Image (cartoon, rainbow, N blue to C red; front, side, top):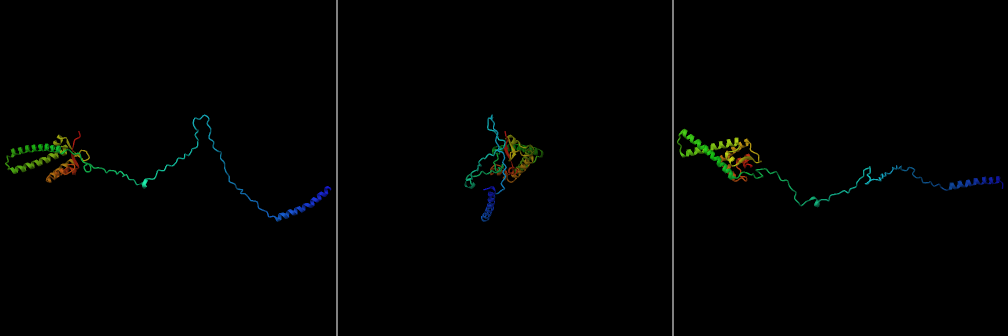
Length: 240
């Protein structure tokens, strides 16, 4: 066969093959190919940190960035019995007031009586001198009841003046100084002049009320009289 004949046969077969292919393609349904999601996530990769290696280091190298130390959380155990304890809680003691809640360290009654005896002797001597001078000047003759009444009144006036002048302005009588006693407040501080004045006036009222103010000394737990309770003063021993 010549080249022209072969080419003619090829040309004649090609249209028939094309027609067959078109028929097959029309007969078979086309299956759509699955499309993959074209949008993919963009991941930025950072370079990993590699600690420098120290060849001549004596200890482990220290990192420049801080590290988080994970420590276990210590939770206290729950209280037993829902927080109820058998032991009694300590209560704060109230403030104790001297002379009311706290006993006072007053002077012993014996020393106080000796101080009163010394002061009484001084007043009696002064009243005797005054009475003798009065008798020599007036030459008056009095009966026994009149002399007793005059003597009692004279002693009372002398005693009141003696206590008022010496206690208020001197702070103590010769009897108190001889027995080393002093008048002070319940808190231990010395009594001021005004407080000593009220104490003397209160002692006069204790004596006028038939001596009931002084008799309270035997009933009081601290051995104090009415005027001492009112003025909050008492007779104490001097600190040596």
